[in-house]
Amino acid sequence: MNVYDFDETIYHGDSSVDFYKFNLKKNPGLAKYWGAQIKAGADFKRGKISKTAMKTIFYRYFNSLENHEALILEFWDAHRHNIKDWYLEQRSDDDVIVSASPEFLLAPICKELNIHLIGSIVNPYTGEHLKENCYGDEKVKRFSEHFNLEDMDQFYSDSYSDDPLAQYAKEAFLVKDDEIKPW
Image 1 (tube, rainbow, N blue to C red):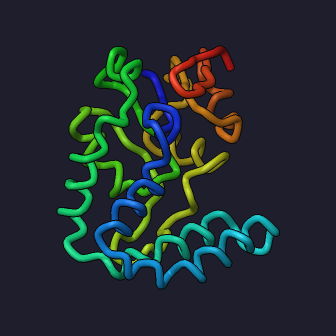
Image 2: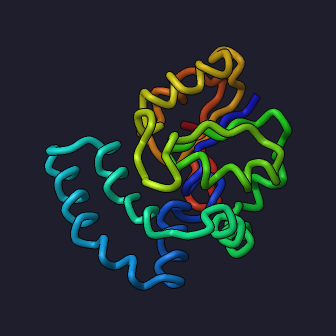
């Protein structure tokens, strides 16, 4: 099986950021969360809070969304073109996405692509992380809950933060835009 990070790997951009911008255009009132979001980002950079805590604060804007499922489907209607062509050309039914983005956000596009998904478990109504953010070593833990690490043929990511998971692949690749290089 081949395993992929999602954002900036098979998707042009960051889906969580794009979803936020999508919702901000529809509801400019979400700007009321900026103060807390900026403070959380700064606190994370200073090492005062974890990435999971920072993202939970960022995702609090989910409280102000209505018709979550419809919004997510509308988002993917407008953003499915961001799935990279090189990925679509090699996609296989046993592919696995392991992403720090919320599972509920990526679920519709992964279902459409008929691929497996492991993402961050986030409450879509409150933004609360129900498990540790699926990042770094956590990706190895989460993947091994569902699959055998030894079954990973190829791994693709845009970031060396995924090195803990890449170490288990028979081959690993670093993706920058549409360029793919050996890890």
